[in-house]
Image (cartoon, rainbow, N blue to C red; front, top):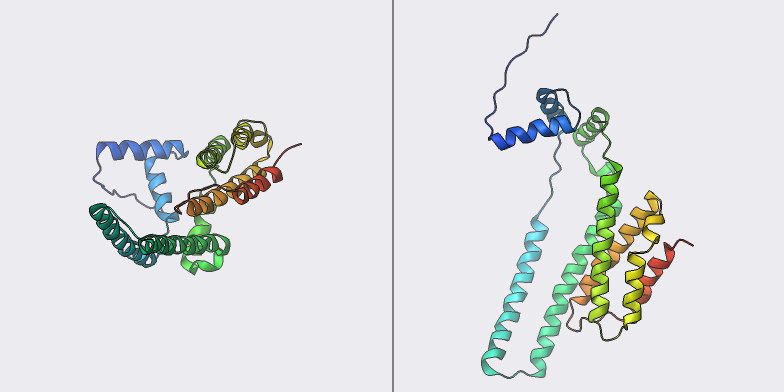
Length: 235
């Protein structure tokens, strides 16, 4: 028994229309209808509870207002006491601890996320999406993004070393040579991604630490970073 076709009209801007046409061609679909149908079949939604972030922002904003009030008073009076400094350090530590706690929670989510976290309906839609869209992302594009992430993270680390009074220029030069040397380009794809992940996690923790008043990249920071570099060194 043959099935007759019907029409489905959608109002789009010219830019959106061209984007959808280009996207369907880029992904190898014969026509826009097939692309839209497969997109609808493979689409699924994961609901994320943002309450924790709203509460976190509220806590940090409240502490920030107290800090700003103290800073305004100091600017007006032109003097400050040891208790004022203790207040700033204490509240800054509270903010850093809150951010570190949330960062650790996100790392745990990354480690613990698996198929058991999805509902049955989500699993079915995910399986269909994987089965119906056997479209390989160009390897070149993926690797370019990985190299770019490594470069950005290491440049941040170099800047931290440069600003620290506890590190000399030899260390800074060593990191620059490592970045533009042969190591990252000699790693196979799996090791390169592992390296990028280790550098990313290290950099995020370093950013949290350097948010403190001293802003010092110390020897412990350097040794931790050097261990990562040595682990992926190609001899």
